[in-house]
Image 1 (cartoon, rainbow, N blue to C red):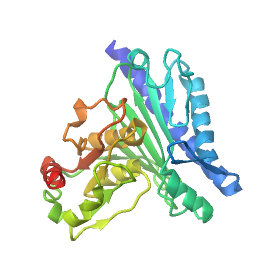
Image 2 (tube, helix red, strand yellow):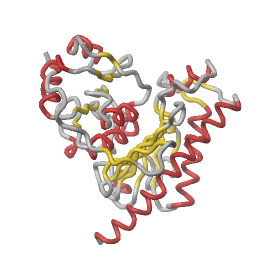
Image 3 (cartoon, rainbow, N blue to C red):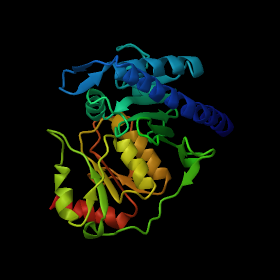
Length: 300
C-alpha cells in the first residue's frame, strides 16, 4: 500500500510543474492578446475570462493525466453538483485523489494590471493543491507567479519538501527556512497581511505591532508564503473566513520549508482540515515564539 502511494504521489509531483506552467502561460497569452473580460460574482468578487479559461484547461489536463481524480476548482469542477465526488464531497475525497485550484489568486490585482496593460509588476499567481485519498492536510501543491519579469514557481510535497524554480536556473533550489528570525513583532522588518470587507480579524493592526517594518505587497497569499519560505518576509497573515483553495497551497509550501503554520485561532497546521471551508485564516512565521507574540497582541 505504501509503495502504491509513493508511486501515485511521484506521478502527480512530476506532472504538477508542467501543468501549472501551462496554465500560467495560457493566461499570459490571453493577457497579451487583449481578449480578457471581467464580471462580478454574486458575492461581489471579480472573475475574469482568464480565470474560467484556466480553470477549464486544468480540468482538461487532469482528465488526460489522472481521469479518476476529483477537481474542485474555484471556477468549476469535473463532477456536477449533486453527484458523487462533487465539490465538497468528503466521502469521495476520502477515496480518491482530489485537487483544489485557484486559477488566478489575486484577481483584483490581475485585473488592474490588465487594465493598465502592464503585467510585469503583477504579483497574482496560479495555485494548485493536491490531496491524497483521505488526507486532511495537503499532499502536494504548486504556486506559479508567471507575470513578473523574473517568474518563479514553488512546488511542495510530502516527498520532496519545498522546491523553488526560476526560468534562470537549470535545477530547483530546495528551500529550508532559517528558524532564527524575529521572535517579537517589534523586531519584524517585513510583513504581509491581507484583508477585505468582512474579513476577521482586521489585520491592518499589524502595522502598529511592527513599527519599524515595511509591508511587502503581493496579490497572492501563496506567493507571499513562498517569499516567507525564502526569507524575504518575516510573517504572513491572511484573515478568515478563508476558502481552502486560497490558503492550502501556500500553507504546505511554508510548512514543508520549516515555517510554523497555523490558523488565526492558534490551531496548528496538522490539526486543520485544509479541504473544508471556511478556515479561520492562516498564519506563517519562522518560529513559534513570533506566532505566539503575534496572536497575543492580536487578541488584545
